Image 1: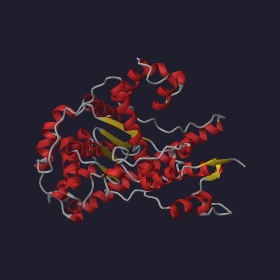
Image 2: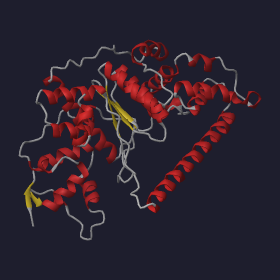
Image 3: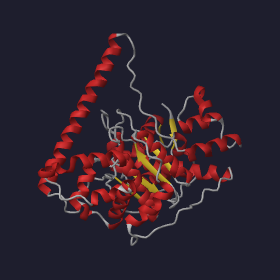
Image 4: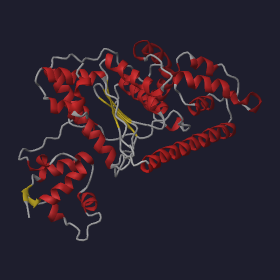
Length: 391
């Protein structure tokens, strides 16, 4: 039986960081255990290595973190959880893990950038909540709006590249289907220049809107973690001022000149087929979802609540039908592969890599600040494929 010396203060530091009590940690550790652990089994100077591994399955810090004799320091630079008390989300453990992971990525990126003599300063002004979001959107589009591509994923890549050109770092994270506790967040902004997005494979429109929304937080320099960034939020007036501003900014930023098309529409009703043709055309050229555009009509009193519900219900049904067909198609492909003796391919989608992040890692590699193994690990690429990331 292996015993290790635990620095209890470091474990307590994690509990504070994640907002988890000792009782809550014990409850997690005892899931499916026949002989439940007691507090003395976990919060002791000497504990079993197997228990320490179980603890790290919650926090993902690496075993060396818990046995390091150095005392932890609680600082605002370490985590948004030490800089801010309340968020627009009731975060689950999966969300807190993701936020903590990218706080660490942000710090590591900043260190590498400084050592590589990269000057990553802000070149876009900070705006105020009193500034008109439509006016700000019109101004910022000149600098940050990406070249439009009808393919939503390609447009998102262009969008992230445009941010990189202006020293805004975007991370995209992907959660596998078998992850035990998925993060209940869509995106967040960390000062001074980091935006993190959850890959939404089913709706790139929503992910694009989330990125524009988090850009709003960047422009206001207001850190936030958002659980349900949505361009279809009909409870608009229940949002706080900052969230309303960011939603409005995101809409006008993505809509561009097409916001005037929506603005000029008459009231939508059965007589004009609820402007379906115009709405679909605007959605196609802006990557704003059709539901989001109908929500704008609702907010501007250009469609009745009854008609809004009728139209959006139909759209949601068609989306659900499409998802079911897609699910069936993938299952057919999987079964065909099995029938032909092939292993079904079900790899998770790869996150989009920001050119700013890649360029910084390349510089760090060339200056011997990291080795090739670190380079591959940070980009999550296989060593044999590293060549395509070095050109």
